[in-house]
Amino acid sequence: MRGTGDGTVGKALDVLDHVAGFARPVRFAELLATSTYPKATLYRMLQTLTSTGLLSYDEDRHTYAPGVRLVRLAHAAWAQSSLAPIARPHLDLLSRDIGETVHLAQLDAGQVLYVDKRNAVRPVEMFSEAGKVGPAYCTGVGKAMLAYLPEDQLADALSRQSFHRHTAQTLDTPEALGAELAAIRQRGHAYDREEHEDGIICIAVPILSPSGRLLGAMSVTGTTRHISMPKLESYLPRLRDAAKAIASDAADWRFPDTPSPARGAARAASH
Amino acid sequence: MRGTGDGTVGKALDVLDHVAGFARPVRFAELLATSTYPKATLYRMLQTLTSTGLLSYDEDRHTYAPGVRLVRLAHAAWAQSSLAPIARPHLDLLSRDIGETVHLAQLDAGQVLYVDKRNAVRPVEMFSEAGKVGPAYCTGVGKAMLAYLPEDQLADALSRQSFHRHTAQTLDTPEALGAELAAIRQRGHAYDREEHEDGIICIAVPILSPSGRLLGAMSVTGTTRHISMPKLESYLPRLRDAAKAIASDAADWRFPDTPSPARGAARAASH
DNA sequence: AGTTTGGTTCCAATTAATGAAACCTAGTTT
DNA sequence: AAACTAGGTTTCATTAATTGGAACCAAACT
Image (cartoon, rainbow over all chains, first blue to last red; front, side):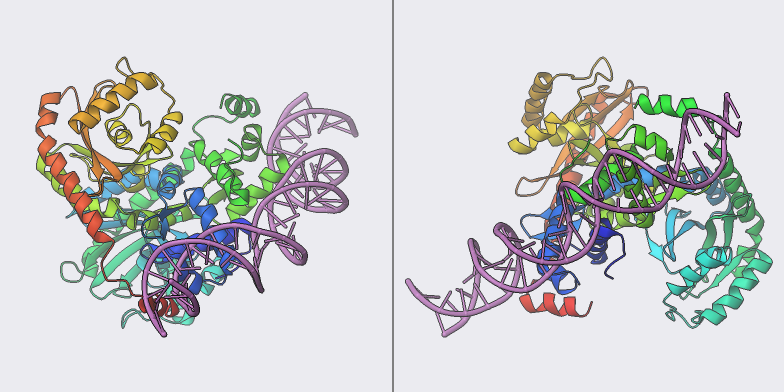
């Protein structure tokens, strides 16, 4: 856990992650008992994080929790990410079209990070879903992304997988996963055959920029009770079209106007 | 801008905010031109932020943008905040009940921070809406919260208001706002009479814990084209009930189990 | 070829973080 | 009531990181 390597800021983030890791407000003593940092260091770190608003401190209960300032920063991150805001209208369309649960994910530190979601039947359940993380080696979107990762990044991502056997179908060895990734590259899409959760299946495609760079992945998900894999496969053309449309929008998006050296400076000055 | 005061972490956050402040990916030179930090310092700060995932760097375009790691952290912040997750079902109910746009907000550094929203027509979009900030002095939720802030915190919050005249109705002096806040305390709810945007009106109530501490605020919003203030006022009882229910849930929430010294240590050890 | 713009690296001076230990303080226990 | 203690907070000499001026490099213009 210790030493993400990046000086003071890295350590501060260790602590922030540590606090966020508890799914509830946590007291100093609890953090100390599970921390590699000495008392005084941890204490001052928490002070700093609290005073910057990254953590919030409950005076009454003497507990720390992630602060609302993060929500604000995340909004900025989401809004100007190269994928999520562009994909939004496409997700709307796709979801209305096929009427099943649709996920949009990116890869973050070897994990699947869900950045958007459409749930056809119950539209509201979603809010707490974006920002969730999941394993890459046993989810449709995860495998779709791993399959199209450059070699060095793939090695890094693989080294971060836990290969826990979630269900009887989970591919729980790097070898099995390697073969699966090759198959995914072959056919261009990934399946999740109840590998993460019993009763949940999905079909997923990567979102690749025109130049072949991996941007994210997208999936249609269902329960075995109400949908079959062939049915999911029938959505594949539309899923692919949406992924392609998103990728092409994303490629355009960076050039809304012709960049000129002078303009940048002018805009900066007016700030 | 410089020197939030909190050592290295504070400076790093200055830079992070600075990047987030541009509503688009930015280049090093642009940041440098608008930064108080010297070249080398800013450069290394950006390196650190990038390598920790708080910023993402576009190799091709040489631009920095807020990183997806923030979305992940924000999820934790949102999910264990003392207000938003508790309020969620109540917002669902209220929104289904009255069929108008409903906002849930908190106060963050003198600004209104929207933490949840229900839009009558469209389902919710995660951090595209939540995480947004707005002015406190000229929005319904903002004024509702300012009115119930302890004196010292109010002074701090007021000092952070810009008092920009958004519309003809905007209260753009501390004095006018002070009178308005007194009136809000009197009647228990706040109005926004097109003070922030022409054509947008709303009615808002504070969310106060049983002990009177301010937790946040909630509003029902509409356009003057399709709704009138009396109609909005007719929602007041239900809005108040929802706010009360949220506050009471929030008060209970902190005691899911009786704390005992031994348990904390045991749980910590198993971590 | 020459020059400007944009980005990166060096390194001695400076500043901040560190952590062991001492010190509070509000509850318990004897 | 005095002694203890768990949980927090502060001190301070030591250690490590940040700082920023300046040099450097690499493209993009001229």
